Length: 236
Image 1 (cartoon, rainbow, N blue to C red):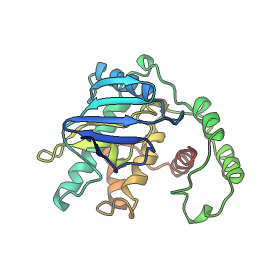
Image 2 (tube, helix red, strand yellow):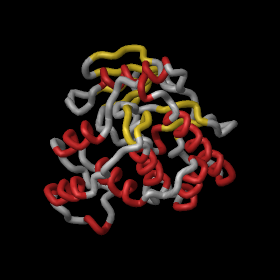
Image 3 (cartoon, helix red, strand yellow):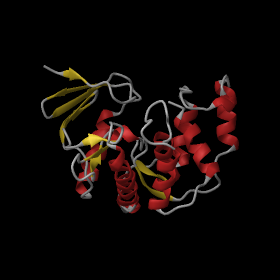
Image 4 (spheres, rainbow, N blue to C red):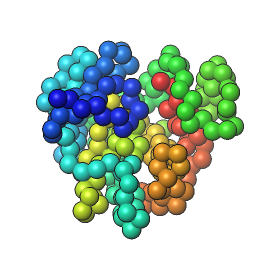
């Protein structure tokens, strides 16, 4: 019997049976064939990702990756290792050759898609509470960066989408890669730091974790790009 998986916010129906996961959706925004292609590409690069067992329109079946997500409860002593492992995994992903990546998520692609979609203002912050979609869209266009620092990005690099070995605290792979593609590295860094500081979702971490993540990754804070890519993520 398939058991429902309620962790995550993709909107698709995710179920598990033994060591197999099944994702189903009739929503055209969920390109499960494209997600399967991205998983296969990652594995071809030697990057840890779930093995695709079946992939067709509306259905993606994968083998379970070992480990537990970074969003689950970890002992206090383990949390710095989880944050460091997340930074190391992110650097490894961003080090994949962009010339070999067939998936494009740069702003020329992502912004028009966002503006054609709706808005899910789940993490806009108090300063934008009550803003209309038109006002949010205007803010997105007004704050769009003039340039990009392209790398291979996960596209939804939040804590539930990265798994870790419960003994070594080393990352074992990534899941939910439907938005993987070439994009500005801050697309991932903005969402990872937001996830690390989301007190309502991941209270075991906090500002210290976001600072440690960026320090380990090796980049100073860019508040403008953080704000832009977090806003972009709210269009879905």
